[in-house]
Length: 275
Image 1 (cartoon, one colour):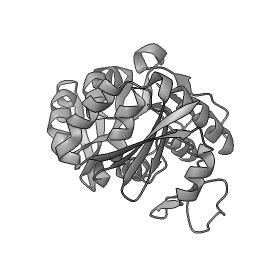
Image 2 (cartoon, helix red, strand yellow):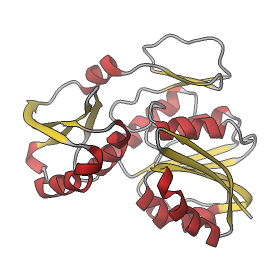
Image 3 (tube, helix red, strand yellow):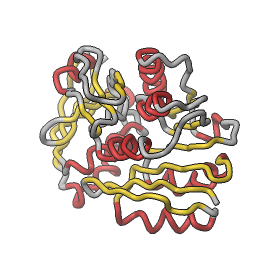
């Protein structure tokens, strides 16, 4: 089966949101490049109208340009291995792939073979979530990871001493990849498939992690709040700093108070606490 290939040049801060949007309309493979992202969709199920609608939505803000081509299906694993480097979050955690050597000097190490899932620690949102997790006690806690992607935040929760971790994602590719990563990191759990409404996780939880995008968060924050124990923590990222006010308006109405806020490359992350 042939794939359509689109080489998208865009501003760096828009890469992850474009990946998230395109994954919802049939694109199943993504590769970050120096100029932006290369994205791939099966030619027999490509939805051009939806694709062009997403590009037009971000065209000006992201300075998008596109080159289109067609390729035979390739070894995606080999492609991302050429472009994937380890990252560190202070001395808290070293994130590497299985083909990288370990490094001394870190409190924790996470092994992630990301394939084409989201969340390797490279993006500002994932980086901030990991850093903020390290600042909140996870020992003996029940943790829920919403839209888990590679499973990196769930793995971090496990390493920080969580008693129970549940995770799920809407993408079956992410679920397969996340389960592989859980096994690589010694976790005997299975990622669920579906939205939070589909999965219907059984609360209450001490900590809920949600690194998704603004629109999903605005819709689902009331569900997160309902799943939290009193004094529980809600970690949010996947949005820009100017969006914080919109999210806090809903959060405050649900009795969630801002504990911490961070920013990296114009992306924001929040830690909220249920009163």
